[in-house]
Image 1 (cartoon, protein in one colour):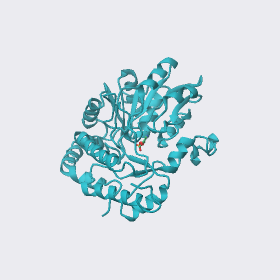
Image 2 (tube, protein in one colour):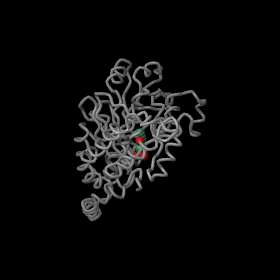
Image 3 (tube, rainbow, N blue to C red):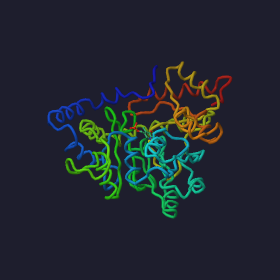
Image 4 (tube, rainbow, N blue to C red):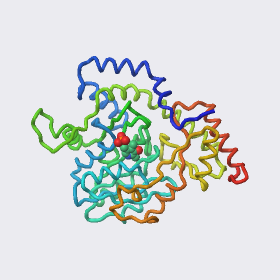
Length: 373
Ligand SMILES: *Cc1c(COP(=O)(O)O)cnc(C)c1O
């Protein structure tokens, strides 16, 4: 049996008729930038995320970048970011000319450790970016409280957390701004690049609307030095269909995660830890294994595809060599890069495929050099 890491073609097949009808309708409308499809998706997604405003943009990196620009982050400013995130979180800060200041995660949740943020604040700090990594909500209340005390703004990176809840409320408006990606592999994915920012702040929402469209709300009148970072109406039409199925697809992911957590307990793996205030959406199911590469090889031989999120932390990437970090500078991020492995999870995975993943891991851990199950 083959278990692909993520089967986007199977997911597409499930909604094919609905999506193709909407695409055809959108193409035939004669409206190819902005317009009703974009506005309808923005309104639906704002409601889903429990936010007053949603601004559709071109992708997740641009969502972060425009959000930072709307907060007037620029050269000389510092922005606190997790040491263990997809590099886009850091790149958005660098692109604004500001300095990403990494803070190590909590080793149990893999999310930003509120206790370590205070030590990283300097007079130049303007924004903190908690990332809801792997679909697990970060502990927002202590971050929001600290930000209020120290006059900082909070921008959440929710690129992996569509539908996640923190203390019973959907991710989407806890911080000042929330950035989303609809990259095809995310829980809510377009058929190409797409993104959005949600917020309850009308002023910031208006500013991001300007920034995404050449700094202009009236044709050929430019209030800001903006960008062309608009959400494509065809992607908006697709996203509107997929949003209707997102909750059900997240439930499927949760069921698989529950099985993994129950049936892989005691197999020598460090399984994901979920605090009682968190309702995650299992964008990824990441485990830690002391002999990670051997473990991956055994799974691969059984047809089970795994990936590493992420093999090199941002501070050790060549792109950030200029910041001068040495190995061991951020040990938790480095430990994660060395030991984490993501096993298949997704809405298209069958019961039999999940059985196969579990039985393969149990068998592997009962081998002479396994951890025992
Ligand atoms: C995917 C992702 C992004 C970037 O989104 P794109 O749409 O690919 O630009 C940003 N942050 C995190 C945590 C992500 O997973």
